[in-house]
Length: 495
Ligand code: BES
Ligand code: ZN
Ligand code: ZN
Image (cartoon, rainbow, N blue to C red; front, side, top):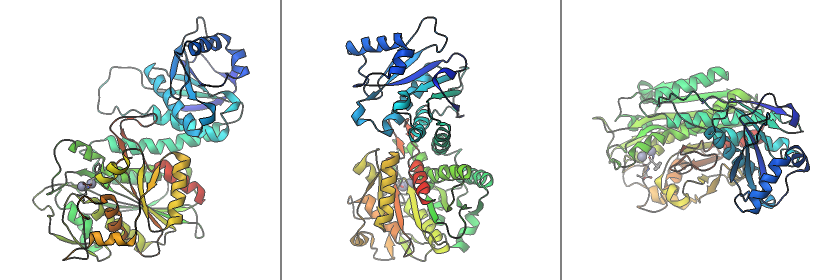
């Protein structure tokens, strides 16, 4: 998807006729005096529609209007903002997404957008506006032939008296990372292989002057990546262990660690998954894709901190050499793992990632992202990510960032006693918890075994939040980009 350009302009500076002019309407507030003066006919149309109860200006409700002989715009689109007292920045993000989607349906190329003028569109909100427009009008059309000459929105002019171009552009940069994460998730597993993820990481590293190291299957034994090696054994597709190092902050700046599950297809292995819905397991790399989305934004905006990113990547398949229930693997930190279910593979590859990053770098905080458990979908649905931690004050930072960005996280407990659930009779630990009990937390307790003592760490399970069966507002069906905006907000607070 190519991203459109933005300009910010005072009301009268629109150049040429727009294809759509989008504006926000509160359900309980008059349109601004300025708008009423400039657009008397629209004002009375809206008043009539509201009187009749056809347009109530509920959040995300919309109405398209046409004005004869109008040279400003071919059509006008009113978007409901809901009640003014419940209005917040996410309402604007959502309303902009509704506008963006409508613009696509109307095949609009040139769009102007106004959200109640000065009343609302303050600089800080403009970021949400561009995020909503871009994330809401996201499409993935790469594998469908189309005769349609319409290729999407080309230009957006945001109308505001204050200068909002910088926050609009910042929102665009953030959204570009979300778009990359979604694209990586949408590509099928025969395209988005571990090599594809490694190539994407290389391109990002080059653009952002980052150091990159990629280990291949032949290196795993000497490196001690026994978890990744075990899982990768069943697949002929080459696995990768990707390390990116970004130094934007110098010696005294904070260092953030990121680890993402890059499982490009999860068949379940010998403990094979049911065939219905197995296609969805191409999304099992969304943790890795979120990390790549974040690093692509970092390459652009160059924050003044340091970041180490690690993505262990492989398929989980059923080839002749596939690892089996009962096998014992040894992870990077030397801990032995009894395999009781080859479908609990994500934690095995993350084990090497977490041990490697914490033993080789001094981190002020470490976050891992993974589509790790079906249990988190049962617990939280597709709305919140599950977060677990060994350091409450670090988790609190992420919870706050989740509220600010609406890239939401909900905390699950991780008391030491959950370690009992992953005790093995034959190895140090086993890769499953107690049957049908707290599966998400058992996975978190497992991962904690590989985080070196002293590193503040949060595990974020995005198996639900990472992708949607049914789209809503600025999140279309398919991958959402969960985690990207969450971490970008954390990074901003660390600078
Ligand atoms: N990739 C899956 C988790 C998943 C499930 C992601 C649904 C997205 C949607 C993971 O590797 C897995 O299979 N986990 C098992 C673990 C179990 C065998 C202990 C699960 O959750 O069933
Ligand atoms: Zn699995
Ligand atoms: Zn998996």
